[in-house]
Image (cartoon, rainbow over the protein chains, first blue to last red):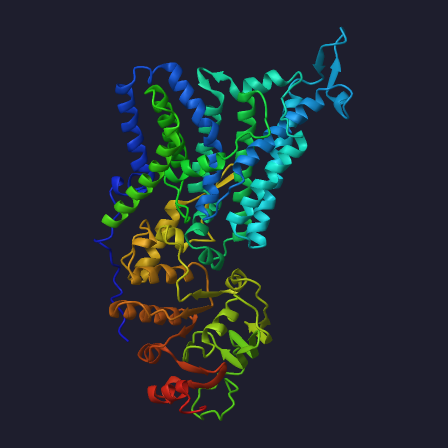
Length: 360
Length: 266
């Protein structure tokens, strides 16, 4: 058995790809981002209203309304799973939040005396600690999301049920609960903290819509988590080869539960924000939003087979959907075309990626 | 005697000094999958620095045995001792913790990750930033490059595994076993899917492991590879150990006969 030379060798033929050939630039996300930029330029020439401040603010606000949930769903999609309960979850957490807020602000309700008291005139209701009711009700909404996420994760990771079936069931269960708790009527955020609530969910900061600010912060956090923590690496590994992840010591069950919890929490937060914008949480709120969320993630480059995806893709997908919707309105095209066009774009985006990966 | 085979021991088998404890000792290992008896009464002692070839036809129980030692599933009967202590592995990580590394036949790589990410999967190098611990990409890439260099494999730590050749993938999987102070490295068909030159590399790596006192168990179909690097060959047939001989006391013909059943035991 001859041993190869012991001299240290350097590999002249092994280098690092040029920057435009790796990472984001060589991915579907890159191509779709490019397509989006082209679309923005075209829109600018097609309609003088498109790049007005008001319209841009509108677009920013509108895509933020599904983008936060898309970030969460992207985690699940990267692991090769899917969460169809996103839309129902948005509604349920919004409903719980506004119901808790109203309950705690109504004197006479159990526990309400801890939070509110009647003013001297006997009619105006004042909060004992401003903001506390808001804090607790948002916590209640997110708490419900946490529980739903844990149940999803438990069924999928521990019991081994298929993600599709589990979350399809959860879609129905949670939507049903929305109708049960509200008796089908929906609920409204009320009480002394409602103003804070509206300011935090549909207000502006230096002209930037509040949901957009949350979105940017959460996307940055997500980018760091996915690419610079062991958790993020394990999320990708599970999507790439779950068996390998298991064999190399990745805590697959734990990571899977965590991604479903993250997804449910993101949907919950999204629901609460939408509720602030609508001013109410009707029982049919966010129906079928899960499809928009998944569509946005897929357009942005997340692979439903697992292993690929990221926050930029999620946002780009959402922006693209919204710009198209907005563009159709500005171009005075019958808005019923929107859904058809979205479907075409989903298929096109995936098709372009397939053609590209064949060419390499 | 080193081992307790059913048949008589050849007189020339090297008898280790009595104070040398085996690294791995299996006693009466058996495994049933429902009504199927995959393994029955396997005894085996493996010593430090030995290279042992485990041979057998498909369905002979090689992979089952490896998976039991690696902690993929528990044995139905019998006892495993590692460095003299009885061990019970629930998961592969448990086996790795005591110093057993496995190169799986399918290599257990995540295609969508880089070579470095795969090498360090499950034991990433992290750096503390206040309350957060973030991946240390540079350190992992540098260490991976070092390991690939040791393996003489032209592999970039930054390349995605899905773009790699069979030999490069093999290098990534083997590099993994070099991260910790492994005492026993089991390789399941490491030379099955790679080029001639890469086979040489893998075999020379096995020599290197042996020089460092690491025990290697080579599971292979390829007779020349086993005879090139192994000190001892163990032949399995129908879930039982049929032979356990020093390599210089046997021949490829005899091993073939043992594998096929032309010769019952040796």
